Length: 127
Image 1 (cartoon, rainbow, N blue to C red):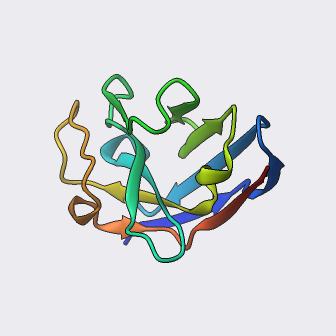
Image 2 (cartoon, rainbow, N blue to C red):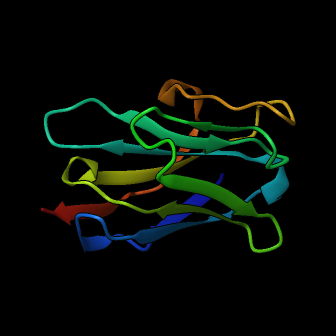
């Protein structure tokens, strides 16, 4: 079983920055492909960013491209989401996801492909 714990959410002003972290346990971290998803009230869960096991293949949704950066530190068993130039529409509950079935360089943008999920951390951006 993989455990995922997110941290770093909170309140930010539009144009500001936040950095989310997700610490994983229960598997060798380099065996896990990682993703960040978000869900706002009344809306479907959507991909934010994803990174492959080797950290080379990266995916961003169009809505965050150029503003958010996903990275992973395999030595610390942690994946990060640096969020800059925040907008009120970024307000959502952000979830970390992981899966150990992907190929070494594979990324997946569909939430149904991920087997493990964290509890989420709330991000609220005020205008």
